[in-house]
Length: 305
Image (cartoon, rainbow, N blue to C red; front, top):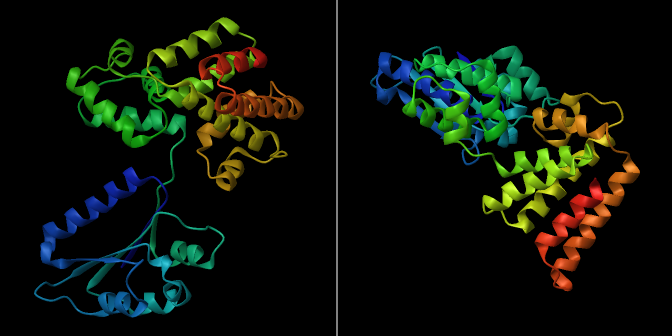
């Protein structure tokens, strides 16, 4: 039996692997598990582990991480599958795979294929709700979304915040979320852009002041503004491509792309070019003319509105 664990969602992919190992060890013992790093092992070494009969146990679990880094393995994958001993279970862990490759298609065809993609905002909110329920707690769908908006789309960070909130109270509420969590700087910078493009100068300045109160330096905010403008440029020039296509080709979270698409409706490509040029000029002037970075960011924000 061969199991494939793929996808960039490390949290859920690792959880699945731990469960597989725990179940196998419960039946056959710790001696029945063998781990191989595909980045260091040769094709012959991987084959030897998959084809050899177990020693002192009646079955063997072989975990191979990133075997696709070994070109011979992907080239000879069909032969590898045929050679696996009946007593052995093989787990292939592939964090990143090019879906266009024949190897990817063979994994889906010849193995028990399990994909763990990065979740978008809705998926994260649903996952958070399920996680809280499994921990004997409660949270509304609206509050789960609020948590994602405040913490960001890093699933590991969300789980850590949920554990903290559950330790405070089994009933997670809006009040406890606002009390015990902080907005991620990047999330607030997106909100800042949203306010500026909407012409809401008061809200934009308030969001900026909040970031400064959180000890986020203006140079860091300037860098995050540059990143957001970069994403905006990718979306504006995507020419009708779907959210998933943009996310996949630009290697971005679909949630980030979807939110940026809303911003893109408020600005033209010419306006974006002017903003990029202005931000670059302010960045240069803070480094060469001694103007205060704090003032530079404020001036730039006023130019956006």
